[in-house]
Image (cartoon, rainbow, N blue to C red):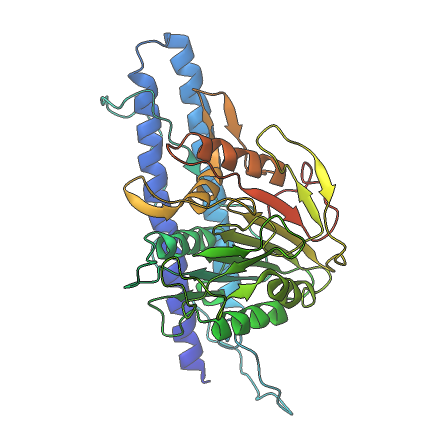
Length: 409
C-alpha cells in the first residue's frame, strides 16, 4: 500500500480517536456540572460538607480529564508509528518476503481536541440530590496491543427477538475506544454487520482473535444474546450460546448450531498463549460456567468470598477471567435502563467502570478496580434494579487472587 494510502489511513484513525475523546470530555463536563449542582442544591448539607464534596468531585474530574488526554496522546503515537495498514483481527497470509516500506510521511497536525472545561462553580440548577452520577474514566495508557471481538445478537424478526444486545456491543465498543483500543482492532458481529454471527463465523472470529494475540497483549471477548442449557443438575449438564443461525422457535429449542461450553473451552483455552491477558464477558442466560474454567469465585452472592476448584480441566497458559451474566440455572435480563434497552450485566459492568464517589452509599469507585471489587459492584447495581434476580459470576482459567489483580480494561 502506498504512502498516500497509509497517510490517509492514519489521519482517519486519528480523527476517530479524537472524536471519541471529544465526545468523552463533553460527557465528562456534563457529569461534572450535574454532580456539582446536585451538591449545591442539597439543602440537607452544611456549607462545609458542600465544600468538601465539591473539592472531591473537582479532583476526580481533573484526574479523569488528564488520564483521558494522556490516553489520547498514547493512541495517536501508536497510530503514527504504523508502517502499514493493519488487517484488524484477520489472519495474515504467509509471504516469502515482505514488500519494502518507505518511511511514512510525517503528520504535523491532528484534529482539534476539546479543551478541558472550566471547573469553576456552575450556575444553580434544580437537579435532584438523591441521584448520583459517576464519572467514567480511561485507564493508564499502554503501548501493548489490544484486540476485541464483540458479538451482539438481537434475533431481529423472530419470536425470540431481544432488544439490547446490539446496544451492548455498541456501548462496550465506545468504552474500549476510550481506554486505548484502536478502532481497527475491534471486530464486531451483529445482526446488522456484513459478516453475521453464525456459528461458523463466531468460531472463526474467536480463532483469529486468539491467534493474533502474543505475550503482553490484552484481548476482550464479549457475547450478548441468548443462552441455553441442557440436562441441568445432572452430570451431563451443558451450557450453550445461540448464534444467529440457531434453531430457537420460541420454546421449541434444539441444539442445532448452538455452541457448547466444551467447544468454547477448547477454542479459547487451547489457543490462549502464555503472557496474554484475556477477559471474556458473556451476558446471556445460564452462563455461569459457559467456558468450563477451573476456578470459581464469589459464587453465591454479594457477601460470598469463597474460592472453589470446580473443574479438572487444565489451567490456561495465559490469564483468562470470565465474567458471566448469571449462574448456570438463571436467566439474564434484557432491560430498559437509562432510556435504552441493554443487557443487565453489560449495563452494570460499564457502570462499574467509573471513577467517582457515591455520597449516598459511601462507595468509592476507584480507578484501579480489582476483579473482586468489579463483580461486587456489578451485583450491587443489579440488586438495585426492579425485577432483576440474576447473580453474575466470575471464574478464572488458573488460580488468581481476584482481590489483588486489577481489571485489564
